Length: 436
Image 1 (cartoon, rainbow, N blue to C red):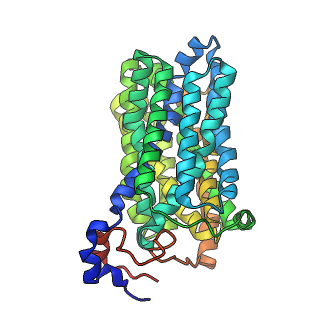
Image 2 (image 1 turned 45 degrees about the vertical axis):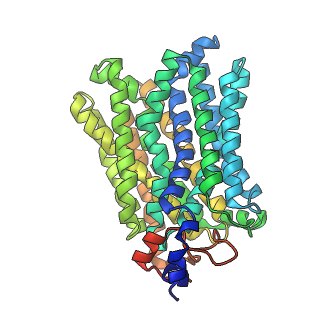
């Protein structure tokens, strides 16, 4: 291991004018795509009554548009990851966001519900693949001990969307019309294309191939990690899906207060993604286990807190903080996937959208059985504890056979072919991180 010459040499410092963008600029560009994705994913739920009335269908039928998007995510993530194995990551980011922009534009222009279903499916296809590739790009730009933090910063785009993007889209939907909200998302996606074109590191075509990417599916560690997210994350979705109705029927607050609670959830998710990955970079798997237990406790307290708006706000904040599990499991998948990095990273979002289907389904069953709106909390707690049991299997496996992480050089694969100044000269010169 040697110290990078370009990080310390006078020549590197003198050429700072031609240096690539600072790391924060690149992470912001990647996070902007997450902001657009998070806005359309969560805002479409709050806009459901508006497009249902406009398209002359009932609300249960309109819910199929939400399912169509989720199906696009689940199917698109692995298929696009395998198909794009030979393409440069920067190219994939640009194409994926362009398709996402097109899907949301077609949603805004849909003449009927059938066209809208097709457009929502198209919009969902790039979702998981984009986050997977963005996570790989972010992780490749920092030392190994900061990977979870970098991935968490990319995911901040999605969590901040729940604070700003979703309320804004809902406000526009009520004032102008639901089509304008999807048009806004399309504009955000095009802005992401522009930012990535300007600032995303240029890299060479992928050296992987579809068969190598599919090799991730032969790894038991990959499947166990995916199962933790698909089961354990379902609890959060069980509560979030029915939160608005619980606030009205149980907490007895005005509908005008609902955006406040949704924002509280988003603040919890954002702060969780900011701070929890710092612990994960020191102890990855133990942090995942703690988050699952933390989520289980917060979900168990949900029925007790639902009667008091202030207690409920605190509990919703805690449930939102458990969203940080996503960045942790993303890092774990990168460790156990071997050469199939793109597929494993994309499958993480397929797993979470599986949780997005499982949690609301089981929570809805409990409500229909007459257990009450707050029954989603205990249902969610059971899912979090099941995720913890799966985590125990993964943790015992990790202790018996630790994963050897082959960290690529910090300037590869995203560095230019010829010597160039480091990506973030200020940070790298201070940290003096070794590179291979």
